Length: 524
Image (cartoon, rainbow, N blue to C red):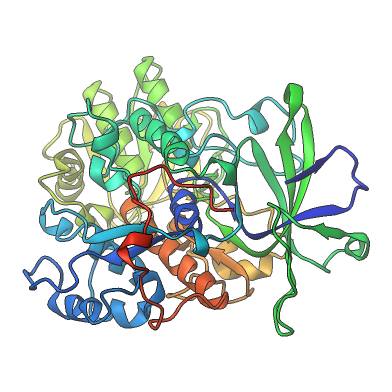
């Protein structure tokens, strides 16, 4: 990465792929790009129903060909799962077979290190590897330095003692079991601090550290040639690899610029060039807003961590209005009920709407969330400190704590001491210079949720900008178990464009393989 304190130093170091964000989705993609390729481990074995028969037959037809090299659209046909992205469902079916039915089966994927297939890439993150999982401490670039004019962000922070929603095994990344790494963790669900440590250690253990740059803040992603200064820009090789000449029909390179904390915590500018840019920065940067009068009043809170701290300190002395029907809203309700704080819960949908996330969580694994859902359905009859307002919309919040709402049963007013607005968050994608490439995702849906970016379902490449990709929460995959499918889709597309994909290429002989249990090389 080229860094400089001089704005007129127009050099950009080249990398084949630049990934913006360093959470689980980015880490998984880095693992694949470093030359770690997935294979179907049950090829040739009799079908035992763990994997759907039609998928087992398809994969068994090419036992020596990596899943990454096969037709992902063909493999994804007929599969059902809890993601709207077909490759995510495919990967989850193979990696967590039968998980939605309570099964705890081993993954059917084996990983082989193929260093000759490694792709030069760079991963840019604000903090240590792990993304939002690491946001339990102050962020150097957004809190100790006043650079909000460059990239105004409000980070949602996680509380270290919170239990994660997913099972511990569902939080793990390829090649390093979470329980294997954290032997003393006997909880069915891990704490945020456990997972954060695991993701940071994963990058080091799997030999990916050379690809990661921490303490960076991306401020601009644009096409080469979109700025007048680009006529003076020199692109230099990165990682000792030649740039090569792109095909005549290839789209222009991308230029990624930003700030990095350098020596003595001084900010340095950096600039890199890439054939492909992957947006893997999640959607937790900017809390969604109601857009109603009074939302900026001091007793209105938009982040889970702030609300939990307020409840823990006894700062909520009267009725709490919770707005939203997701897991963050449920967490606030549970925390308030445990402390005897009266709750009025307002949400836009019917309590029986099948789109609610509670219907996607197995009841046996998440009884507390289903308890909240039951309270929503019965209006609060099962809890004396809780009252539900379904199909509700906040009209205004007055300084004296009087909140006016429109509900399915007509107008309503409640007087509260605090308001918790838990309606999701928007991705902080202000750094993408041409916002038109984001499509309608620059806005939000009617319930305040971020719209998924428009991407090809099987490559995750932007429909509006060739060479730009998105994965993870940006395309609707909010659970770690599903985001790895997005990494597979992108890595497969990169390999195919580089002439390395296709079902004709077979797995190397056994004596040429490097054991996956050994620490892997950086791959560049």
